[in-house]
Image (tube, rainbow, N blue to C red; front, top):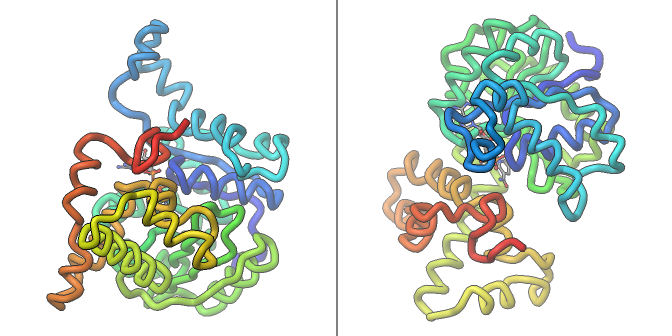
Length: 309
Ligand code: NAD
C-alpha cells in the first residue's frame, strides 16, 4: 500500500496537465510532465531550420507548456522556482518512467478510446502499488480501465481537478468498481491535506456531479441566448458578478475550459442518455460546431468567444 506521494507523472501537458503539474510542484512534489509530439513542425520551427528529430528531442509540447506556466495570470505557481521541480518528456520514449512514480495522473484528450489505449500502455510499465488516476471530466472511469488487470483497477480512480487547479478547491474522486477502499481514503486525505482541496466522492455516471450540472447550465444559457437574441457581452454581464459569480461568467469560462473540451464533455452525456429532453439539451449547438471547424478553441488557440491578447 502507498504510504506517501513524492514523485508524480502527469500524462498530457495541455491546459489541465500542465496546471496540475504546477500544483503538485507547488506542494513540493517532483513531477515529470509528458505529452505527444506532433508529426509536423510548426512554421516557426521550420523557419528556424529545426528537424522533426530536434523538435522531438526538445519535447515541444511539454517544454512549451512548462514555459507557459510562468506567463499565465493568475499564476499557477506559488513562485517561479517551483518550476525547477517539473521535468518534461516525450510520451513515446519516456512512458517507461512511470515505473518510478508514486502517482500517475492522466490529463489527455477527453476521448474514451484514446484514454483506454494510453492506460493499457501505462500498465505495461506500471509498478504495483503506484496510484493511477484520470482527470477526465466525465468519461466512464470503469470504461477507461476495462481492458486492464484487476490489480491495476484496484489502484485506479478518477481524480477530477477543476480549472484552474491552483485556485479551484473542488476535486471529485470517482472510484471504479475495484478501487481499494484504503486507497480512496489515502487519496482523499492527500488531496485535502497536501493539495488544499475539498474532496467530493462521486459515482461513475456521465460527467459525475459538477459537470453534469455545469454543462447543463452552460448549454441552456446558450439556447436562451439564441432564443432572446442576446449578445456574448450581454450574457456574460447577466451571468457574472451580478448574480454572485466570479468575473469569468459564461463565455469567459468556455474560453478558459476550451471549446473542444466542452463539446467532448457535453457529448459524454449526449452519447449515454436515451432521454429525448436530455439529448436536446446536450447536443452540440451549431454555433459552437462552426467555431471548432475554424480552429477557435478558446484561450489556448488565442481565439474563442473573445480574442486573447
Ligand atoms: P487540452 O486540449 O489542453 O490538452 C490535451 C492534451 O492531450 C494535449 O496536450 C494533447 O497533445 C494530448 N493528446 C492528444 N491526443 C493524444 C494522444 N493520442 N495521446 C496522448 N496525448 C494526447 O485539454 P485539457 O483541457 O487539458 O483536458 C485534458 C483532460 O482534463 C480531459 O480529459 C478534460 O476533460 C479534463 N478536464 C479539463 C478541464 C478544462 O477546464 N479544460 C477541467 C477539468 C478536467
